[in-house]
Image (tube, rainbow, N blue to C red; front, side, top):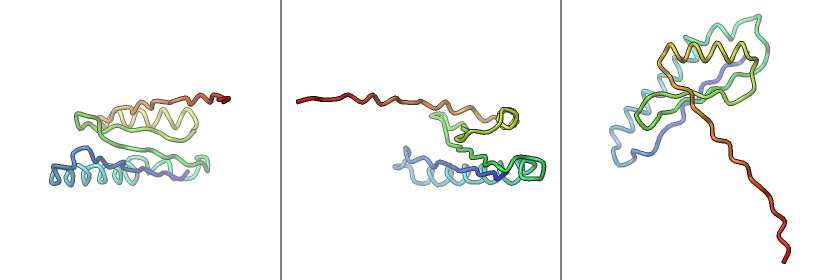
Amino acid sequence: MTVTVLAILETDFIFQKNLANVMNDRLQKAATELKEVHLKTLSGKGFSSEDLIIYISYTMKFKIRYCIVNDVPADIEYFVASLCGRLGYLLWRKVSVEVIERDLYV
């Protein structure tokens, strides 16, 4: 299994450049640690050859949130959820937006 953890860097606090640098560095380190330390066991043999892609970002209160962005088996999803829960990360609720196409006749 190929594990990829991407840090989605925040730009909402662009006027506070020092804070942005510190928080984005912290997020990059958390992404690297999640991939190379905590999820290292998933990269070994015995797991499917599928990919696991996780996005991490911040909430409005600067808590780290995570989201699995591709389809993975339920046991892998549960493993990631329990691991991220122990680390204090919150589930990133994705909002799906349906686009309704309308035929416009003029």
